[in-house]
View (cartoon, protein in one colour):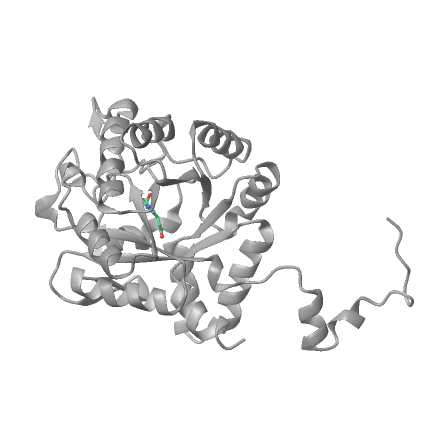
Length: 333
Ligand code: PBG
């Protein structure tokens, strides 16, 4: 490639005003890029703010319908729901995950009845339901991969049966996509989409989420490092993603986002199925801490981070800022 040299080529010619800037802009943020994660609680209070995530609430079954309505009005294509259940319903095996009348299943049914076109994403993992807060069950002091997979495949069936459109296994067990896909096919859920949390790193950015669903206090010193990925590795992420695609994932996800843009970039160049990214709770909280201290401009920083995630190659983004972006940023453009 040959380029003219200065002064024939002046890069600033294309930065003179917002019209020319917008014509040459390579990436855009649209409402159709967004998935909105929403917390659900079995408490009766309609909405309770999560301390470590200012501006993010847990909603009761009554309250969540309003949020679904809001997503619908804003044209956000999908919501992801995460339950916080009371401690009294938790046990060692996460049995409540397999109750077809549990909080998530009830919410999915209710939302689908009112807003049939709004896509619903549900996590497949046991952490909201186990006393220890791990995503799998513990046998002989280890998170048992294969026994966990059996429970996760039952959990997927229950979710699909409630009307969940997109099953999102976030547990990082080996071989679970294959088992989930087989189970869904066998039970005639042929159109249920699997969005695999394929490259999920063992990250400290998840702490506010664990506050939100009250799953963090008993995790123990080593946390989730025996199943989530080591942040030092990128080749391993490619292997994880390739495995999940081969096992039957329709979409893969990388998480967190900002410190992992290299992974998003590599994955989106290498694989031709859609790669999504999750701007996680800690990323949200850090931005909001800056905003609430008056240190940074919320609108500019939120737009910048999400645009950078798209530039790296994410096709869609799960972000707690989804309603803010859709209502405050994109609508005004
Ligand atoms: C649980 C799950 C986690 C997130 C999504 N699903 C947390 C974890 O693995 O402990 C993190 C989301 C966030 O931090 O916003 N399987």
